[in-house]
Length: 297
Image (cartoon, rainbow, N blue to C red; front, side, top):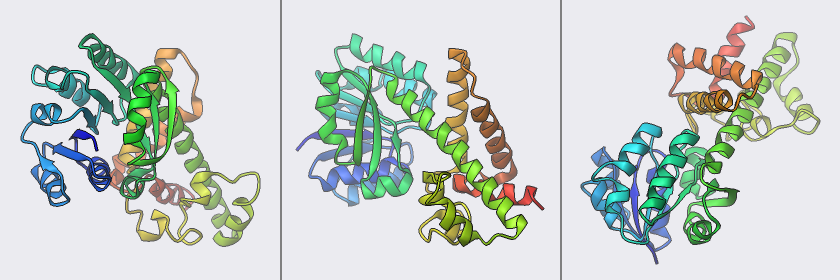
């Protein structure tokens, strides 16, 4: 059993922390919103009143935060994780943030004698609840060996991507590809609908031929073919359009820094910006199907 401080108990962090409790770890949790802390306590975790209290409670400290500025604040502040963590603690940040912040925080942790992993996830809320997340992990081999058994309590696939920051690189590239494939899938189904080809017929053909992809086969954006997909429950979010836009912005920021051309990624970012600006940020990212269908009218 490990002692774990968990900071950030939102839609993703809450079920991740709950899975650690189910795995018999002692989890002390903190969130700026009090209700998720109470939920964790009801499931067997311990509440913390501050970041500092949660950080000091564990040999391992895990964070799941909205963006880079929050990560810098929570880790680097005078009462933050690096200042308050136990000597020899392993820090694991599961947030999806910019590469520069991930590497800066890891460097500050190293200066304080602490090991750190950046370990963003793929799999959405359903993956967090089911303990089937994919973790893309940056950090040293030693830190990865220490953290892997803990990550395995929350995920199914744990991949060491290389040194600090590489987990974030893997995540933003993965989601840029996902966004592009989702949009292409939506356009194909919208065109088929416009031309009179039944949805199920197109799915039966494409899901077993050269155009098959994860967005189509497992998360089909057109209602009907995949019963468990968000498209069949009003696009209730597993992974919100707002979060996809955030990740696309990160990919474009990184592309600019590296002077890399990503024209499809840029186009995807523009389309998701339009979708979110239309008041759809809380919908599942596959809900962009609605906008693309309207464009066909």
